[in-house]
Image 1 (tube, one colour):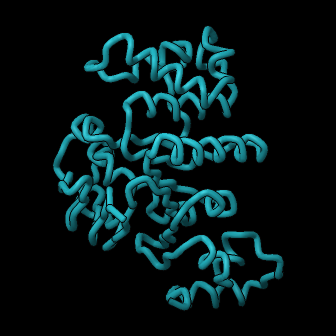
Image 2 (image 1 turned 60 degrees about the vertical axis):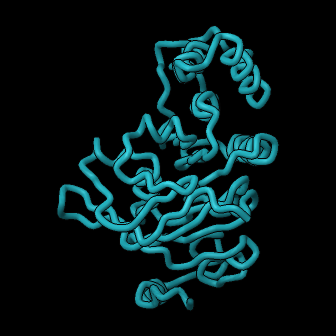
Length: 264
């Protein structure tokens, strides 16, 4: 199986002081979907930004390690260059141009190298995955629902014809029925377009249903990895990420925090 993306012992520092991720290593095979799970503040978004190159505006930088994409170390390359190589990131928070309608948003995301015909084909492809956007293509994006804005954000990323699509918390703030719908569309994009997926999620229940492999990050370090079946069987994953049914008292929570080795 060919590896499309590999992070090798990556460290990221913000403001030359704060070490946000510490020796992170993970792989995304070509045409596969991989989840990066973890609690808020664990380092998930920073890991994605080390791949897309979006650390610099936040005064962060990769200070150690390699980010290998298509056999090339992309550390040091500007974000637009990485997009041209086939890396696309959907940021947390559904960032779209609210004053434009969905179709204008999609056109704005299309690379300048594309001609009108190819741009139209990509728009039609996006509408195929998200028919709600076609129905509301003349509405201002700012008036779309949260779910529709998330669909538009994913559609904008697809306009760049990515080899790797990175999604940062796509379930955030959405109703469960919408989460299920969007995750099934993500699965379709992976299978039908052969686009590799790197999915950052706190909602491990839905993420583990659609991915081939998963990593768990905690306090800036990868502490566990495996197939969804293996992770689902781990008692710590069950308790703290899959809604385990047993009731914990404060002593048990402290005990959990003391054993961060995750029984590895």
